[in-house]
Length: 219
Length: 266
Image 1 (tube, rainbow over the protein chains, first blue to last red):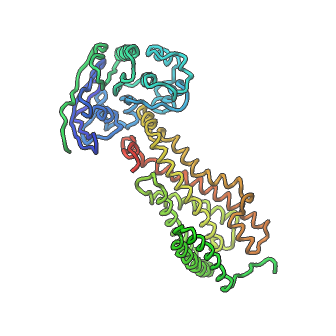
Image 2: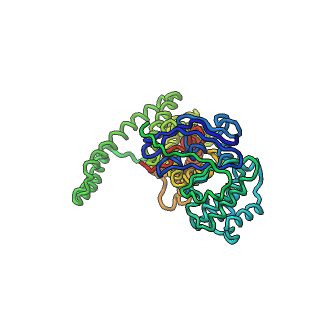
Image 3: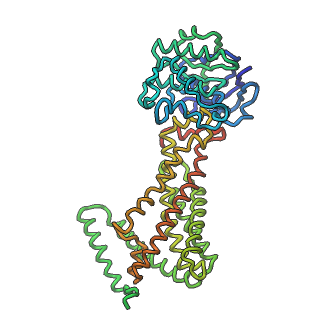
């Protein structure tokens, strides 16, 4: 099993008034789609799984290794979360793509490959002219795709994607899913996806579901 | 005769009441509502400074090293309390950390100045140590309040960037580094700026005091140079220690940002 989480109990919503307990798992090449109405704690689940937010109890495993055995920073580089509205750093698009390689956890693994970065941008329909553009001036859809390219470059094993196509038009949405499917064919890779648009899932090959419909009130 | 203090007698001091009357009448004519704080402030100035005058006379006379250490430590405590209270962006007043960083920088820089530069006899002479350490503390106190407040407000405004760095595998230090730099810069800027204009706009208080006290201005200037540079060094060290120690409080055990950084300021 590539990735799994057992009895993760976490709180979410206004004043942490809701509590929920979930388990799930992900085999290599698979996408786990988290479904549920707004306010069901989908985004919070992704943040908990990336250890950006603590949970009350439960444990996550990557390749059978518990997250208790791993520093948060190492875990997050492998189980990489992309926010619904990803942040960009000061500087050009190129600066943004190089930035992760200034981090030791990433830099120790590999060096920045501009050729690969440009190829991925092209795949996601990001024009090559954007390379030197100030990243702060990008549109929401461009930022979403930039964050995806930035994520693929650091070679995570699990992607936690929070509505990655919400800001994309039909064409770039297709491009996104095709890039995601290609990436998933690599060894030991998987994704946990929160999406409101179920039509998109036809682009993906191996999909399983996690439903967060049951809202439990009170702590 | 020219090189000595002109003493101010009690009756001469009483004339300062004239100055208070001027301020008081401005306040009451314009209804500034400052009359009460003005009177209270005037009384406190007289009482506090008179007491300090007697206390210092006594302390200078017995000149005991343990008493001096005790006084400087109490000064550090009061300064850290004041500094910790001046940080609206920081939720829990970091009294212990500000005390530690003020103690470390004050004793370090103050000892260098008294032992190596001024080297009075004995080296712990209260007449030198207490004013020197006091000046260091006064400035460091402002420095840490500014830099700590900036650290927290930077972390808040940049929280999305910091979290993105964390998701890319950054350690807390790697994620907060840029904010730390800004915070130290904010703490040091007033001191560095004062180096630029010193003597041009106004004469610094210590130098003025020495000149009024009958010292040769050329001598007073030399002291002032030592004081300015010592303050700069102390502020730099203090801000660095303070921010270096407190940036960890922004993160939890998993190295992720604490919830209060992500929420609106309360």
